Image (tube, rainbow, N blue to C red; front, side, top):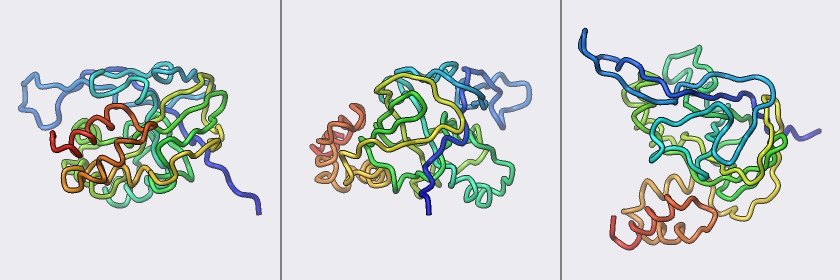
Amino acid sequence: MAIKAPLVLSLQVGKVRTMPLEGAAPGSEQTWTSAINKDPVEGPVWLGTSNLKGDEQADTKAHGGPDQAVLSYAAEHYDLWREELNQPRLRHGSFGENMTISRLNEQTVCVGDTYEIGEARVQVSQPRRPCVNLVRLLRVPDIVERIMASGKGGWYFRVLAEGHVERGSFVVLVTRPCPQWSVAKVFDIMKRRREDPAAALALSDCSLLSVAWRERLRAAGEGKA
């Protein structure tokens, strides 16, 4: 029986938008600004070292940059979330991801994994930690806590070779230099970094983990954060 390869089931990009804050007092001017609300795109899309063409970030200090060029999410999580959140029409892209990918998840993807997707070559740089914008997007007050508990946050790619990608592109594993550092394990160590400083220090030595995560882990491991 042929092995089914992972696929990009959908591609999404988002522009920076300013939206009214849910629950704000009538007549107030409370708003929030983000590019997390993304729309699907069809056909070949250029994937550069900073982002998918047409994708933006409102907070460039917390999002974007070479180590967070593309956010990916496991398509298999959607059936679970639709049931858990009682949102049967929850569509791909609802977690702010650029790529919704089948047959891969946080347990099976490792930091440092290099994949060919269409013309591009990408490398897993770090897990994704959820922020308050997901609360605002999904209108689920405890979605951050749910993701932190489940580990279903997704992961980021850095781009090693630019090129066009599109919906339906195969996601082909090229190399796996760090099989000991699954995205799930890395996420858990970051979550418990102050409780287990030895694990935090060990992970901080992984040269293929993003610079930002390595710095935070090393600080925790050395008792500085």
